[in-house]
Image (cartoon, rainbow over all chains, first blue to last red; front, side, top):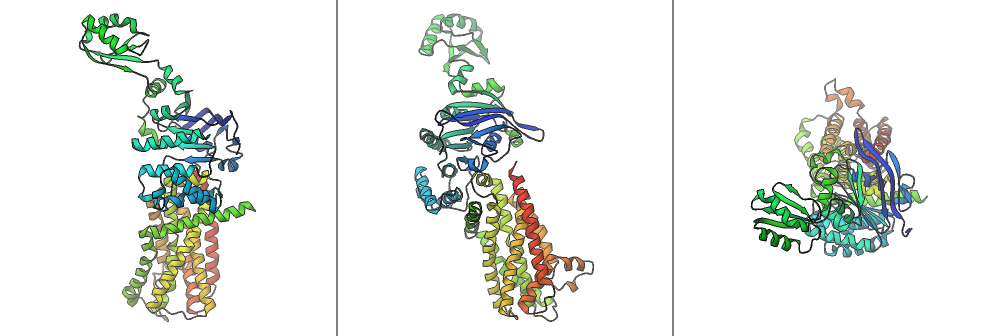
Length: 325
Length: 257
């Protein structure tokens, strides 16, 4: 297995793809360092799945080049397939086989041989806490169990590069957390992961770096902290009992401010110089000035804010465009 | 060489997978056993008395026809399975594996041969129980059985194509029925072609199912075959060539979205 220390496990330049009039990918560049997780973040129909399909050799790009694990996705597609794992947004496992039979089948199709395929299947069932369900038909599995099996299926050949296309879409919180732990454990073992998601907290939680994609274009790339820094730091949100006393409140809070304040729908938003002790200090000052407070809170920017700022729309509102994929 | 070995082993792995599905989906199992038996009984006991087949007992006339019909429908499960795999993303997973691309289709159609064998056994047993008798030599009977399996394999490729062009398993079901049902009924399978209205007879005479039924009838009942056996074999290979080609073309397109 070829592991390029410090090199890129996934590298794409100028990827283009269009379906009729719909531009699915528009000159997208991506780079994922070996042993790290890149979160590819975007709303439905942004082009995330198209990117994954190209990088996993399922789809030929109209233009641009990409190398994964050192192999060109078009020219070396055959060799590349032995070195990648793909888990899709629909749990792509056979309902009429047991968990064990599914994994054994994938092992055989990776040409691991019957004995190794079976051993590997048992190992993976244990890793994903499915040993007890291993002999049951998958159609009796819960959604979370299917996703775990799907992920296990992608790991059969111990691929150095793993693609996860919306691995937790539609799962409940507990199942998502379990899957997140599994993904993190893999990366600590040296696997490179490209993960697409429309959940900002997922990208935030799992990714070393995040690439934001919208309407087929890459619109931002960086660490979660870098992206959050783009929308500013911590903020104090205050709702006054009497909004007409805003000016007064601002004057007394000026020493806390790290930027100019704004008023949004009756809430005073004040960028903070220092998060610590901000609420206590603000309450004390406003109390001294005799300005009544209805509600007060410190807000840390989330990737939601980043997304809204970058795209001008929220991350999960484009359901109707999902079919344009 | 290794490529060919992998193509074979991948086909077998996927054939096993398709075959395992049958006993695990009771509705499919019913389709492969109870349904053909029901057909035999209904035709023999309900319609048999009203259909004149000069020179034959109706049950002897019927069995080759109904066997060809069940072979023709045997590939149904391939259409359903492929449509389902496409919809559920399993085809994407297969395509991301370093396996032989052809195995998804060859595995399915090969599994159909196994289910067709089961069907044949069940139906022949029921046929013999209600009075059907072979009246030809053993080699002819064996040749007839091989021909039936070849016919079944040919129709599996027709169904593979239907599954690949259908948007859902339900659509595949509808297309399959609309195409294969008239094909088997407007043939010599259940009634003599001469008993049909004259405008329909030319269609029935040139229907490949008629050639296939006539061939099996000749091989099982020891009547003169004419050129029907060769015609049936030629039709079968032609279906395999045409629909095998169409299916692999469509497979590449359907998944290249």
